[in-house]
Length: 60
Image (tube, rainbow, N blue to C red; front, side):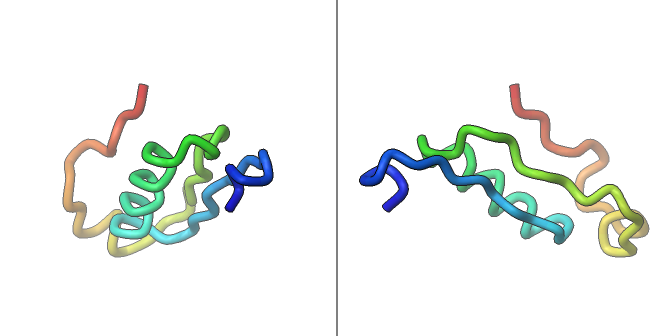
């Protein structure tokens, strides 16, 4: 719908791991997403104590 009205969309995400990867996928696959997604830098046990990946995703 954003493309039909020539509007940009921004991904809003405050959850770690799965939510971040889902939003990153949406951001990369949607031409109307012109701005990078925000990232929550506050401590979160799921991300900090039991990391799924040793290094986070890098998008260039």
